Length: 377
Ligand SMILES: Cc1ncc(COP(=O)(O)O)c(C=O)c1O
Image (cartoon, rainbow, N blue to C red):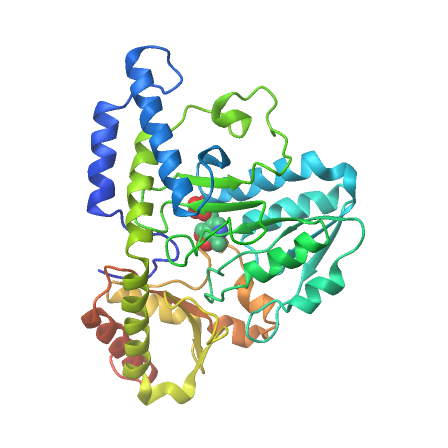
């Protein structure tokens, strides 16, 4: 298998797996239990909280563990909105957001809240002036992602945070695709909340975390919840959190080298594709893009065809966000970029991981070229 769907999920690292097994064996007790083993599990949990907080330059008390990015996004937005809704009836998000964020805003719209959807330019970027124009005296909350999962575009969340703060608007950012790949310093610009996820950075699935600034008011969604200081109900998955913490620490520690390596592979891919480069359209801003994600189309070929062709050779790619699978809709990014139906259908995504090799890049490039040039179909 050649796995190039790392934006959908990554394989667990050996270190994260080891820690998972050890924690599940030795620290399986419920961290809420009052006996010695419960206390040991609680200590491990709090060590992880401290470690995750350091990775984004937050305080331990500002970290809440969740079941992943989807829950992190929805629950955080619900908690922020609940505590601040009396301040105004207008909220802002973008047309590029993950379905979990879209779901929240759609639900608010149904309740009669005014929701503005920021458009993106042809590079997939949200112009700051557009945000400024959209702000109103009654705007209370904005959610704008850091990195897009389909085209890898990086939104300038520092500048966005500064602008929103000036207008007293709360800011949440979905950092699921950026955490562990780009530095995140929540202490260096105004941001109220971010969501991160473990399985995009070689940790286990079903685990994530939320940063919620201690200066920001929020309200529990489930009123009787005691876990995670009322943020999220349910017994805490200590082994999963310990493995997530290991994966996250490794990702941040090796961030720069990893980024260089992935850039090298991305550039190599396009060198290998030179023969057919006139047929290729790569989506998203070249200057503000994470190298891991190559969202592209090839003239005359549907993305679905590419996916199935490559799958025959054991090569895994995707035609958009995994959360959209099964829907007839075009990819969220293609819709946001106002692509024609034909262009949108061409879209497919190759997402590179740390386990990817140059040889694998050569193989996928050869398979794509062969299928485009009519060989080996
Ligand atoms: C940008 C973004 N946000 C949120 C999520 C959801 O994260 P999780 O799979 O941990 O629920 C994903 C996963 O695809 C994502 O790419």
